[in-house]
Image (cartoon, rainbow, N blue to C red):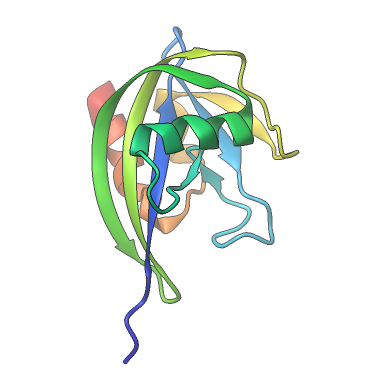
Length: 134
């Protein structure tokens, strides 16, 4: 059996001063499409993790990371690929996030995250955020 390549992904859990979390909707053509996600993307070979997080958030939603802290790290195996998610809580940023690639985006109150359909790998992130909100 061929081993699946593990994709390293930098993920930003972006929070505003009202305690809302910024979500973006994946396009239907993407892996786990039409689901809501925490923005981020693949760390390129030789790229620094925080540089990747800043680059991906700039490319996807038009913000620059000013302050972030490690939130959690998790691995998830899908039938067709494996992901290593390096998740950071972004608490200060420059710019106002928006769907730079045309994707639907919105600020969501923490307590409402359970109303959104996320990629399978994101379930532990949502669970941990909701536990911290209690």
